[in-house]
Image (cartoon, rainbow, N blue to C red; front, side, top):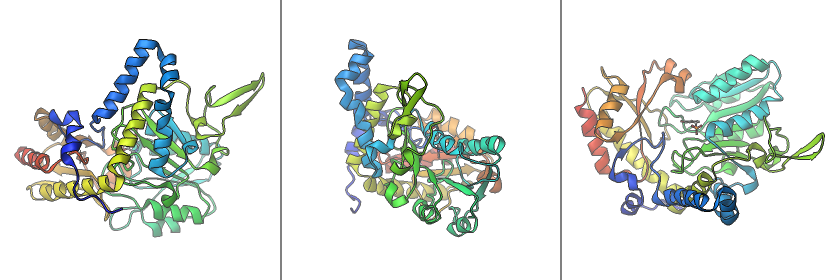
Length: 397
Ligand SMILES: Cc1ncc(COP(=O)(O)O)c(C=O)c1O
């Protein structure tokens, strides 16, 4: 499919109520929800208030269930391979800690230098508790994970390749499919953190070849907060012993026996936000309706304009690396703290976030980066907003 050049910006903005209030360049933090998602969540909560939570579920089960088929469609997976959990971190943890049950001292985990902080903490946790080692494969000249270095790092002790597709702290896109080919041909499990890529570009688990993938609702998918999902490749599900189970994840079959369910929902718990699930399903369908190629094309174009404009402002340094780039734009301004910039922009109703060193300590320490301003764009942002943003950043001293 070729990207739709006539992007319907008027519709995108009209369907995003928050556009009236703020210039929102914090989509990597949490996007503005479209009206249809908001209505789905509110409508479901209204029903719960009117008839009770369990009766609401009985009446609207199809709306709650839709999220599985929608996520499967989004990823080119099967609905049985999807678990819906409270966020991307918990999704990732479920896969990692299930795999970690089999780790032995001396086993090696390979990751990237821009691995997300929470994931790296889990690696350190397992290094402490199971004696595994964690090694960050060096980046290539563009900052992306080097496939050559990855191949050079392999031996029979490598038990997991776990990388972040789009780092939280920069605009590059890691070569997820090339990494997948290395993992596949060497029979190594592959866990992909797709928290910042899902919703802003096509992500196809068959093309990528990952065995596990985690993502969140509130970022580029524009869903409600407090939701995320885990994809587990079908042939892995029954080999994965969940870190904990409840009566949704497993059946208590006799006084001293139980059976863990056969689908990926073994990683879920019984209680969750049903309104959130209903809204999450609508958000994924909404993204599919726009088309992920169209979304990616639009976001890339906007982000390139923003990078160009920032590059023209004296004292501003853009820190994004990578040949393939996305909607995350990171920068600093000489002599001005990034938190100060964020505060000044907030007073002008402009939302950005600040990426501190702890989000990706290996990379940020190596490049001696201070906390950076992160401006992350979505397809409903426009050129006029980019100009306003550049003017505002230019004014700050
Ligand atoms: C790359 C990456 N992975 C994981 C997460 C964690 O996502 P969540 O807050 O949904 O757990 C984030 C959040 O910023 C992220 O940027």
